[in-house]
Amino acid sequence: MSLRDGAVPGLPVETELPERVGVLVLGAGLAGCAALLAAAEAGRYALLLEKTGRIGGSTVKSAGLSAFAGTDEQAEQGIADSVGLLRKDLLEVGKGRNDPALVDLYCEHQLDAYRWLKGHGVRYGEIHAASGQSAPRSHPADTTRMLELLLKAAGERGARIMFGAPAARLLHDGSRVTGVRLADGREVRADAVVLATGGFSMNPELLAAFAPQLEHALRQGGDGNQGDGLKMAMALGAGLRDTPYIKGTYGHYYTEHPDEDGTGILAVYKGAIAVNREGRRFVDESKNYKEIGDAALAQPGVTTWQVFDARTMAQANDEVPIYEFGGRERAGMLLKAGTIAGLEAAIGLPEGSLRRTVAEYNAAIEQGRPDPFGRAHLSGGVGEPAPIDRPPFYAHPSGTVVLATYCGLTVDTRMRVLDWWGDPIGRLYAAGEITGGFHGAGYMTGTSIGKSGVFGRLAGRNAAAEESELQW
Image (cartoon, rainbow, N blue to C red; front, side):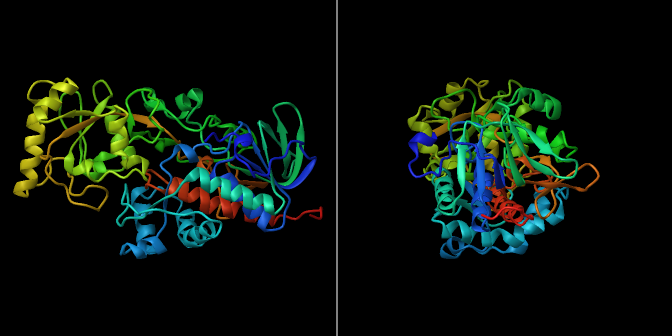
């Protein structure tokens, strides 16, 4: 189904721009939709402006996984997890560069946000382990359905959403943000503004400025992810966090393909190895897929291959896009052969190279020898590597893609945007991909969607608490 507003019945669409609102939200991804609903639940007249003609942003381009600890679904699957372990993983994956206050804020509110989302009808599927997780905590959900549920609930409380309404400037009276000016010159006043405009994965100029190392990476993300909110806040002196740690995501199909939904696959987390054009491994495949992406970009020719067997294929799960191996085979995105030699020839690798690599990998596992790249698990600290020896054998041509930028505005624990000196910019809030500080130098699977829901809700709630002269 198209995500254009006219094709989603029941959304609270507004066509006339009001002169003034209580809380003004920019961006219709998860962070924006959560902020809109939270502000409406707090009793404020809230309006969301979306620059494109559809909801979703990068949220609906993602794998739809949220990192929560201590959930009903984990209990049902017998998964032992804790908030303490979640916090430990976040800080370790972030290499200690995270803002610990934001990590603690996430840990404190993640279960409450999870229950809030479920209370509005969001449903989660089978829990999986993924990058950076010491325990399986990736909760898959239909992100399009999630956003529709939140927007409809917000509409029932008086909130509205406008499409085709790109903001161009934040209005400021010298002491606080007072609203926004749209690209067409119209203005709307607000008691508080929440920026949820996403990152800048689709803006080559900003990527060149902040992440020149990604010059050869593929680019995906929401159509509107041009860094608009970032630039508007920077014009008011907003600080930035984590820009040195922008990374691409490994596993995307190596070229444009109609069946590539933007997430790629991570067969490496179910048992595959990654090899380069010389038929050699080049990385510990259990690492964070951002780090694998960096390593892949450094390989000759950039394109690499995830090589796996029938054992890994049997672990495919069509509910989780990154594990939808069967769908990739049906779409013709996998090479397949009955032998490793045949797969080597199908890929076009140097004769004997893949056979040597797989034989060495299998022998090390069978003999209990340490892996030369340090791989001891399948993903993070979960799962044990197994030999690649069950035909048929598969290869996925994999590139590194910029899906999201995971850096941005400096915020405090109220989600207020801070300037370069650490002082709040009055009445300006932010949540989601546009913010920095939470991830630090690394990324745990599920924390992009997770923080959008958790922090988007907090931003909307706190923005709604700002003093208002209007009666709603």
